[in-house]
Amino acid sequence: MSCEQTPTVLHGYLDGELDATGAAEFEHHLEMCSECLKALEAQESLRSSIQRAQLYERAPVSLRRKVSAALPAARATGFSLSGMWMRWLAAAAAILLVASVGWRVFPGLRGTDNFEATAAIDAHLRSLQAGHLVDVASTDQHTVKPWFDGRIDFAPPVHDFAEDGFPLQGGRLDVLRGRSVAALVYGRRKHVVNVFVWPTAERDHAARSGSQLGYQWVEWRKGGMEFCAVSDTSAADLEELQRLISP
Amino acid sequence: MSVSYQGIGLDVLNPQERERFELLVLPHLDAAFNLARWLLRSQEDAEDVAQEAMLRAYRFFGGFHGGDARAWLLQIVRNTSYTWLEKKRPLELNTEFDEDLHLQPGPNPESLAIAGDNRERLKNALETLPPRFREVLVLRELEGCSYKEIATITSIPVGTVMSALSRARRRLQQALTQPAPQETAHEL
View 1 (cartoon, one colour):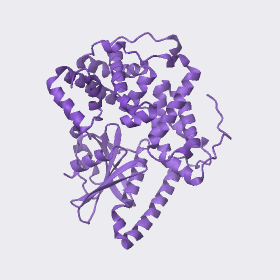
View 2: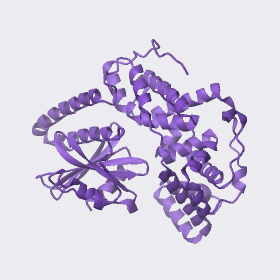
View 3: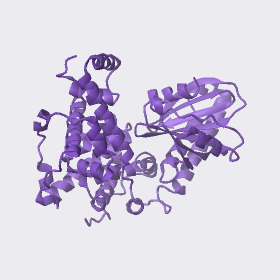
View 4: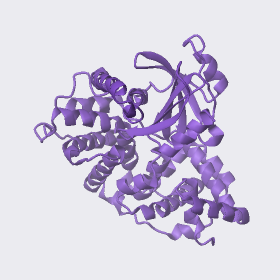
């Protein structure tokens, strides 16, 4: 790889958009080219400055209200409020009912028709509404883990995976299908990942995954805990996080 | 901007489709606002444009056949923003993609880190970039879009996203480490 090409390739590498061969070639090139290594460091430093500066501009409440009011027959409560979620929950409950019948009659449906994930995606969407993401905001696992003590009757495993590209952002209590669960929030580039954790008496099972409404989910059981990770990041990212949490 | 949304075909969707719109598109209102805010560099104008884009998305929703709802919405937000700029601030769109800056050596990481740690300076630097550089940076660094999504939103071939980002980041670095260029009169 010549340095003529690298100014551009460097960005593909930085953004994780090179294929495996391209990334390996660039890494090989980095070992020999101090100029590119320096340029990459500059880009990484620029990126972390941008992230620290928190330049993202969220929609103001006034805009939410205006959009809500302008849409015809918009629910009186507005789209971000309970009306929408009640109907969504009703739909989830209907799917649950159908699925649980299907589960008994057609056990083969079990892996494909995951209604646990529907509730988790619902909770994930809800968490993204302003101010709902974390009850305890901390990148320190030693702050987040004790926070759950006394709030729920189990101790979810809490680890920060910042070095692996999944920085812990905090935790909160959530409810999935009427059951209190711990929600751990991780960042993945600019995406938010919710990992829901609750105790289970059922046997461990390997990860299964799927996508709905443009959101990816991965669900697994290990050591008496059930986990469901949801995000709009890629399926590969979620599987990577799954392996970090339950190696 | 005072636009009346009454009676302009907003009853196009049946209840099921309306519900789908609420589930798939409305959750991306933050993304819509963020992109409009950075393209227009104004909170107030971004509110108007994001609202108009959202209602436009609602009217066109029949043509959305699944896939990436955020990218689909952001494409509409971007088009609405550019239409707005053409009408209200046409001079802003005349900035060329000039490659002269490529000839200058990149700043060193240390000076960049110092400049980049000042939020206001970073914000101003980003705002001084031509909109077509600004948008790829906003989509990548703030919105976390993949190259494929950026290509969809900005209507450029996916193969050119990497070089567009490379140029945009170079411009941002330079804006951060060099004195700001004179603002032109129309930006006042």
